[in-house]
Length: 309
Image (cartoon, rainbow, N blue to C red; front, side, top):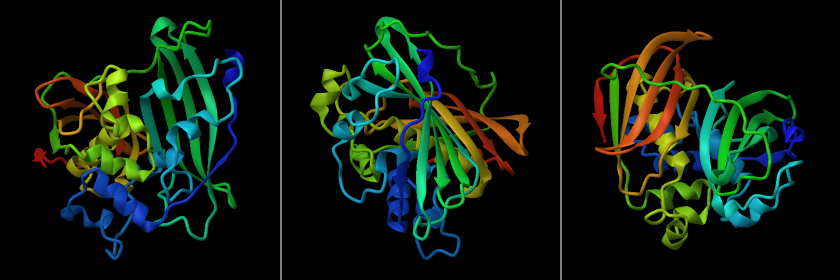
């Protein structure tokens, strides 16, 4: 309902250490030629630029948490029925880098401030919730990252809410891609990625996946999303984290651990705030599109033809 839009959640304290950045880079497949993301003593050691996307799951934890208990424990959104977190999947994510995060949060007090953008009733198929989070240094008020997230509550619609506006689409040009990045996931990929702080059992317990209609435990949508981000940065940004200013994609289909992912990229020539637009899509090799509506903004685009990892 209308009262949902603008509803503010309690702020969430968040923190990270260098070890968290190393785990994250490993979990999205960074290789030895990207050592500045993998080795804390590298002279240019830095966080992979999309790392803040995990903080809404991780909070300040260094230990495993009960994902369902945490998901159920938040405040109710006004005018919206309580949604079962066991049947909620990612819809779309957009991350905008305002300022690069430091290699550790030590010495600063960071928090995520979240608010509802809208909650939309899609009828029998489910409910879409859009939330914006900002990563903020509490002592100064500086915003480091802005994240727009949408989630889909499967089969939990029909409660009389607004249908919502049509989203903006970024289809790829009808021509050969400027770069292609191929990445072979492993059957243990989700079990590694979840150590970042996203402990949804859907990505570890195959019986939960089969109950939701999947072949088994599926890969985190955000793992695929981050693999694509790494591919775009590697192929068009020389793996230099400071070049990535914005990254977004829609989760079009699930990925199974062990699938080979192919990300195709197009440099459109459009510019925004001094950065160049890149459109992309990711598919399982020889099959379905798993990330659609892909769009990134990069400074100093440099094209590579193809990479297979």
